[in-house]
Length: 315
Image (cartoon, rainbow, N blue to C red; front, side, top):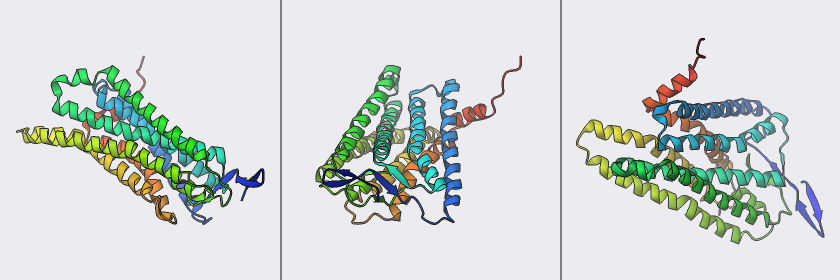
């Protein structure tokens, strides 16, 4: 345990992340698996972003927000996985207190923007399907930028609030975190001061950052479903639903894993199940998103083919 002196008390100046496994035999296997996952995620999301930038047919509000989501996915996996790969390769499991706090801030900031952008994308689908005549004015370029900026601003405020509140806690005892990255539930357990205010703050943030967006998504899609069911043509209904299916799939995966993770704050002991949920949040979700959004979307598939098979023009 690495402790520093502060008056008559000892304070933790670094934490020890146990990581995914303590078995030397499994560490090289995990390193290869998560290195490939990281490369696939970064490559997949940047390919989606390149396709959106290059293909004129994808210069629409829905794909503007999808491009932002791709950047967030790259950021989210980059906050946790490179550090985990370094731990697996070097067997150095310690992380400085300041680095731990920084990792927590950026993770919550990026995940928060994700929450708001998924809500904005649901609102975009509502306008496109339920209010098509006013769609272009109600989702103009200026409004798109304002919605993306507001998502970043609100998430930054929440992440900063949670980080500052956490920094007021004292860590003077055990410094071993049974996880592969720093997050609030694990740090709360190690604090030797009261965490009541922090838990209340996190509860308020969950209502604002997760529950409210989820309610807005459900309301938006309730209107979308009602509008689509009024379409007489089966082909028309299929086309309308196809534009929403990918987004709904991402919403279910994102919120399902997130709710499981933070509903366990009161658990006496965090188990290896929490590591599995952490992998889902930080690795699987960002890796699946490009696949989900391109799987049944011919426009994205065509743009991706042009990006991946792009040749320099001959003189």
